[in-house]
Image 1 (cartoon, rainbow, N blue to C red):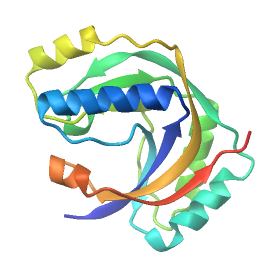
Image 2 (cartoon, one colour):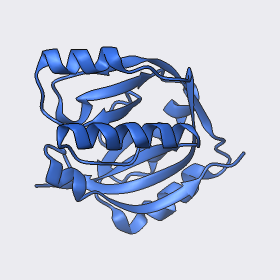
Image 3 (cartoon, rainbow, N blue to C red):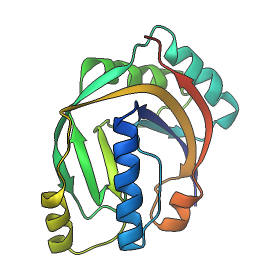
Length: 174
């Protein structure tokens, strides 16, 4: 198993609390892992020793990022079983490019902003029904911090999700 550093945006309250409750409820109902609500905006090589420095540089002059909610979707991919699709914007693209540029060996990671709600292998019918049943009380999500997370790459199962470790966090300036 290889490891990587995933760079996340994390949402502000009360949206964070809404997502966290939904993630915990779904995890309990479907015997799935619990994780922090986030948008992965870059995944690169495991360079934990410089992750804090990379985040510090990226956070300079970076304001909180607002992303428009598009819809609730599902897929057969473990890490996108059930998710909220968000619209990509210039601020997020710039942040991702900044992190990619700070990486000694950049990956070809493509940003597809979404907040995952459930990680579990399920039938198409079950995923479709869940996606239809979720109603979001907001039309945009504001993210005010970024963090670096050591993770298995790719993440394929519950044990690998539960092994994720946040190694650095920075606030985005107002």
